[in-house]
Amino acid sequence: MNLVMALEMAAECHPQRIAVSSGGLHLTYSDLLTAARAGAEVIRDANVKYLGVLDVNSLVVPIALFAAAYAGVPYVPMNYRLSKIELEALLGRIAPALLISDDPVLAPLELPAGIKVMLRGEFQRIALSFTPEAMSAPAEPHDTAIQLFTSGTTGKPKAAVLRHQNLMSYVLGTVEFASATEDDAILISVPPYHIAGISAVLSSTYAGRRMVQLPNFDAANWLRLCRDEKITNAFVVPTMLSRIVDHLEQERGSAGTPALRAIAYGGGKMPLAVIEQAMRHFPGVDFTNAYGLTETSSTICLLGPDDHRSGFDSHDPLVRRRLASVGKPVPTIELQVCGERGEVLGPGQSGEIFVRGEQVAGEYLEQGSLLDPDGWFPTRDHGQVDEFGYVYLEGRADDVIVRGGENISPGEIEDILLEHPAVSDVAVVAVPDRQWGEAVGAVIVFKENAGATDTELQEWVKQRLRSSRVPTAIRYVDQLPYNEMGKLLRRVLKQQFADRMS
Amino acid sequence: MRLLKAGTRARCAVCDTEVMVVRTVPAEVLLTCGDVEMIAMDGARTPGSHAGVAAAQLALVGKRYVNATDAVELLCTKGGKGELAVDGESLVVKQTKALPSSD
Image (cartoon, rainbow over all chains, first blue to last red; front, top):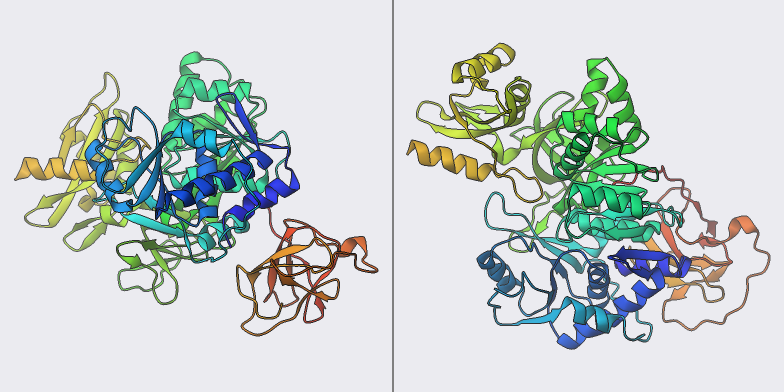
């Protein structure tokens, strides 16, 4: 089993269909297959252990992904927004490697020993310049296909290992082969180093859907590409959808994207207000919430279009609440919620979410497998499943505040504070406390020309939740620290509280 | 082919059919296409056609084929004109629920 099987099948079934469009250039599935095989020869000749890609989305990304699989070396897409020091450290961890990159990210780097660079344009030129003899890819399903460095929001980036069998079982379990038509096109605006950027290439190839790349996201260009390329499908992270909605509100116009049929989103918590606004701006569009992790080869739960519509239209709070859910596990995934002693919890009880299935890799290069003997993977996400089977997330297990032995998830307090008319954004984190060990700290961003006192906010929470949930320390800031994918950097906020109190 | 494991690929010795094993039983099984034993991907073929194959029995690319107990599952990676079977039991197309596109 090997990732290239998806490409070989697509190239066999519809060789002349366009596989990928980027900046006015197009490759058919047949072109992509030939280029991947040629790229594999380049990688083999380099005699390396890894193929690194430190670059924005371009035609080279899908070529390199499949070329590495043909060559039998792990593909390592890297975050070009990291600092010089961080990148040099990560490169040191994959040497000896062939690195595809380009300026401006490449120029300042002092490359560690064992890193051979090939510029993006050079790799593309060679990969498209000749037709190698047909080759067969290594067939060992347990080989590492992709190694992804986690974003490191809670510490040093970990190297997550995804094997061919994990990724292919995800694709086979969630995508119907050749289910897309010639007119289907997906807009890929997530960067290549994100698991959603990888699954987009694999799923689109298997479905036979044309990929259109947007290398640097901004709302105006996203909308322009949707119109110009007659995009039918898109995947966005919450920050992107929020910016698209803001852009449309400012323009006071309609989205003007008649071809667009489906928007999937994931990669972080979606604010209720944003998804509701998005559904108003894109009335005919099917929305799908996809919850997944790098370690699970992408999506493990889905909230589909029907649940979005009924949640949006309903006045029943139980149905309406589903808009805030991540839906139900995909058919090939088992999910359970466990308490602190590992006991399986029932509906409505909060605990840590565990998942099991062939797509679940749950493995890091340094730590090895985190799966328990029965194959269950601890996601480190806190949440619960309701009586209808819908999964609700309540934040990362590492973010849970332990106040005098009581577990408090920041999410419920954040949701309440967000309902306060003066508050536009909020983060709740643990702060050190002499009496309780940890206490509740809140960082608040006010709306323009609005404000409230500590006491007003504390009273607001006290009236709606238990008194243990009331923030004892409150700070006010102009904006919260997010990384480029819209992930809140809680570590930074916790540190700021700790620094102030020491 | 008789000793199968998940991920193994096989082809028909006669028609174009190619498959990948998605799931199998921990025992020797006889994998056939059009009643002819399937072979390794680099095995020697004698191209031809199977006799008496109805349209409904063709191996279709992208479809998954299972036996009655669901213990053996194959993915057809290249379509051909033969009926897939395991130990003489004809395999049928697995019915899957279509999911909304999530990436």
